[in-house]
Length: 189
Image (cartoon, rainbow, N blue to C red; front, side):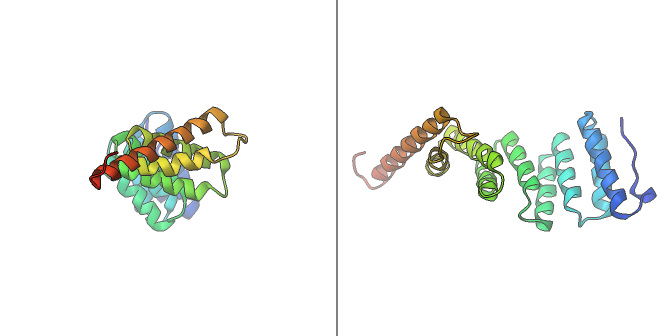
């Protein structure tokens, strides 16, 4: 059921935020189509609002429109290029549609942006990047991401067994890279 919240009846930024809240509530209740209508209304009301484009990306993705979801998240990044919510949305879209290259690019950005500020998020995105790279045999990314994860000290949020597995994967990837380079050079691996 669509919760109608027209920007025309509300004033300025507060009205726009209520519209986005209504879109979020509709999305949470399972009304992706209704949420998308509300998010589109928000972007039409003020195309300079980062949160409106992020919500539109979420709603488009929930409706199965991958290309529009990506376009909305990219518009959000055009407004606030270092803000994480749009990158997190892109991570979800690229994971769902299997775009490994783009997903790893987004995950590398999320790891870098959270490294100094939000340790739990940093660990989570680092773990996701390591796993994605490993599953897709992206050995350069495995050595970088799993190596970074494995180099962490056993602190809160970093399980020792996970850290050791990340190091094992980084070493395996380094060997795979070495062997591939040897084959390219015509040397025995």
